Length: 327
Ligand code: UDP
Image 1 (spheres, rainbow, N blue to C red):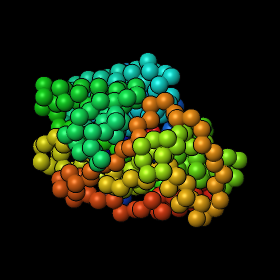
Image 2: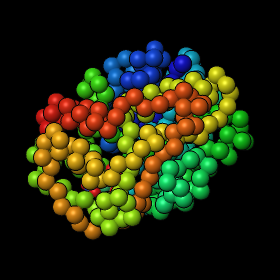
Image 3: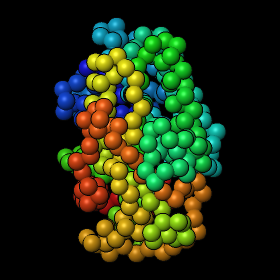
């Protein structure tokens, strides 16, 4: 396949590029490098600097590439994804996530691209109605991040119905870890996600970490999340892209592990390697108590199940952070 990866210099996008190249696909990356890193783009991928919210950028790149050979698939990773940031900056989230996707779909339609793979999120479920979230459960986001992604899902479905494009929408649960090569991982300033923060604390990069709330209705009072290794998640994109293009069908699938861990359990797992200094503080805005994926649909349709465990996630992130100089 010839695949265009928009946001391919970012954390998840760069891992998807690695898996696509391992699977012998031709990859073109577009990224505005706002949070992504040029060095995270695989050396065998072609790179263009461009912004998803600037239509001229996409048209220029699509013209250059599609005149030679059109893209079989476009993958979208160019989104903002920090829940607390979305609560304080909702308009930026609507602009980047929703308007960015609208522009991308307009260009895809103009260039007659048939297949789109889109990163959505467990945050579309809000406070889940079941212990384990299934794809047809009610969607009712409780933060702007989830709301923008749900709006994007709806947009893709309507566009697909109108113009016959196939989509693969993935609802990610909590993604963490680093590629086994340790060439890429989650590398950015001001990290907010639990796994890297816990590891930074274990490595002494942070003196102490905060646990946001211990009065949730969970087994130890801290929030439950479903952690998935970024390489497992990235590989699902290869399978999803092939599935929709070969079967001329659209799918919407959760990517998670079927298992939940509390914040305290994640800290305990890291503490087995090194001590983690933490304190309980107030709840954080926008956090649901529990989010666990049913991944039976991914297994049934794509034959996908995660290979890596929480321990692997922690070990690869820690090894990566060690490698980049304990950032
Ligand atoms: N969390 C925490 N301390 C931190 C970072 C996160 O207690 O320094 C909690 C957060 O409140 C949530 C869980 O860890 O309950 C997962 O948060 P994260 O930001 O990693 O992902 P999210 O589920 O918000 O996408």
